[in-house]
Length: 504
Image (cartoon, rainbow, N blue to C red; front, top):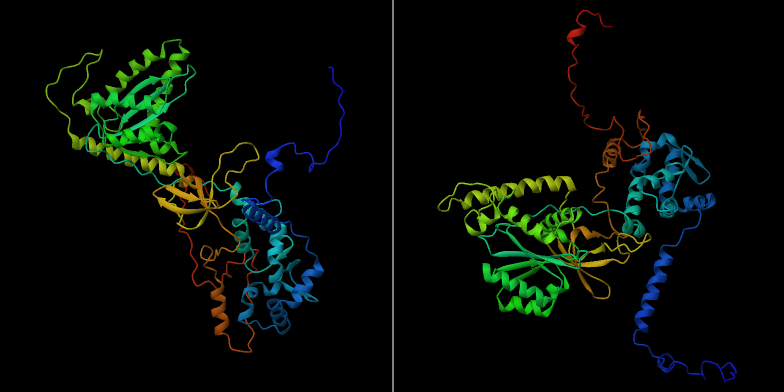
């Protein structure tokens, strides 16, 4: 090149290379929001910081100032136990003291001030409830330690976003419409390797469906296809679809409004909510794969399948879709006796439809372990997110607020004010360490021991109990329980083939 360059350094203040970043004023509109997010992140890091190791002298110093352990030491010296030391009464024979330290066998009894820190140390690495309990049981102990571990692990933020698959709610079968051509379900199947899409329209009453193969899937093409079907069957009362861009376009909304059709969109990311048409998509895709494997024209084979499907009695209604749609049986290649008049009884179809749906509901609910959702409006929840890589957690770390719940469809709002609609299986309650789990873990039998202490005269020593309780402190000694339940024993009879033997 005929040029000779001379490279010289210029400070950024005197060399405005990019005006968009250099000439912007010092005041930033989102600066306060960014500062708030930064402070929240620092606060989160400080809260979740790894706790330091716990030394024995720290336990001794805390035990010296702990009122509960002070009372325990006094009761150990006087050998008289009052109500304040009720939790320690069942294990009083195992307790000993070393200075200000109180031990149960070889394990240190931790004062109240250090119990939460002990649990944090045992929960390092995010062990589960069982693992955390096993870590603590080998070295330390305090009353109701298992309950405190359950409370801490269930409120651990990291464990909540990575574990705990939400059980689906029980099925709610769709009510059968009053007749055919009233409620439709629509969906797009594809794209296929050929670049085609299959537009599927299903009638909820008769299970009769039509398809149209297309490459253009715009809302205009969808409305044209629907208009052709409406010319043959009439305009329905309602249409159910997913949240595809074609069905959310303004052109599609205007078409629904002009024809007086109620448009229902199912919960996002939950295809099972539009299960009627999704089931037909699976059947269609199965036939398409078969024809492709046999090197046949899949469009021709699909038309053959449609005729067979429409003339075959449906497994739920017991009547063929074409007969429910048109009130007559369609002629096929098989020989049949011609029937005159309409022989279909609508009541029988409804009874069979309700029976089959109920039987399917019972089976599916039991198979999936369905449970009624305990989500409440206004509480903080975790929302399942899409996993983009191996490091992605199943649930989004940032809690959302549940603002609406309609059946199994939930609406949540983020801290930024953005609303999302998800199925209840995508959402679970978010628990903080301050949440009270006493109502879930209530029923402690220590009240029985308190009643016994109340009945003892002052100054009289208590009797010695026979049982030595294990690590679980929620069960009272056997002689304190008011009633012992036992299972009935079945009679054991000697087999006939041993009748000649003398059994000892």
